[in-house]
Length: 266
Image 1: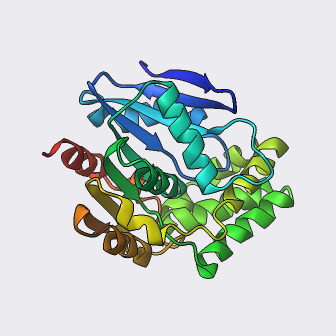
Image 2 (image 1 turned 45 degrees about the horizontal axis):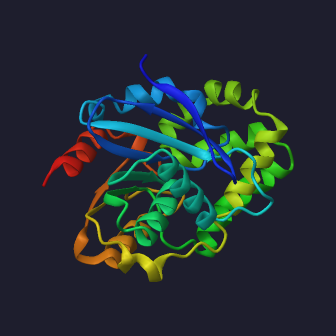
């Protein structure tokens, strides 16, 4: 184990992050929405990104600790930029998955001098009512204190049926550890996606951009990936997987290889 779990505090907020790797280039990872913080999975995250750890020093940022009642994706992007700058990081590559991709697009569009390459996984530039219907159902489960129902609904939407079925016991165990504070936090973070729309700003993303999605994404849909590619334009390239669902970023065996190739090619 070589990762470090750290905290960055500014005048406005406090944020946990994981750092690992020994490369001279910087990769920032922005994870998607989760029921519980990914900080508890630091060892698995380090192992999952080991292929990139020689080329990059990798920073994975959580959301801020104390959430206001309303916390928008733009707020998340602003706080993440403040954390990056407080750590003295410059000329970074960013990989954002799902909600993390929404944050990443906001950062790349608003701070083009900060980001040299961008990877967007299973995300969307516009949350339409059909997409938010699924997210809204998760919010209701969290508001009702139904951690088990939330975990099962979340996992069923993210993963292929066979993986979901094989993981039922693990899902039950994970749900049993969820606190009311975590459910309340989930409500705020999930609610931030209501009305999210960066589609008109995609042309401001000037760095090379790789969009990765899956044709069977049941959360945000495959069309969302194509819409981002079209909006970013000539700086974008897209690759669509098949058979892994929304969580393709965790499941496709060549996902990290594809990331590394894009990040290191001139």
